[in-house]
Length: 69
Image 1 (tube, rainbow, N blue to C red):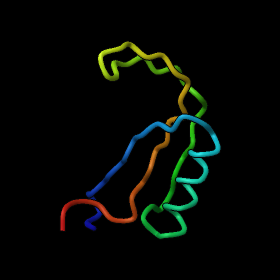
Image 2 (cartoon, helix red, strand yellow; image 1 turned 180 degrees about the horizontal axis):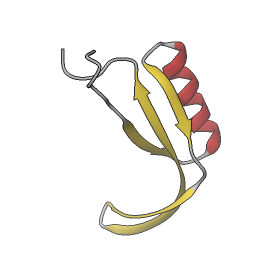
Image 3 (cartoon, helix red, strand yellow; image 1 turned 90 degrees about the horizontal axis):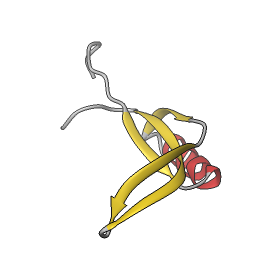
């Protein structure tokens, strides 16, 4: 990775426990250098033709490597 390369993966998980499991798995497998689990947020979105409203936990994932091979 070059010094000017930067990547950030943003995703949401439905609860703090699953967010923690994913964060630990990414770090243990050296797929991420750091994962931030943020405070819960409210997400409103369309899913299978319906409007959904759910609490989710955002994750900011800093990959160990960036870009396409």
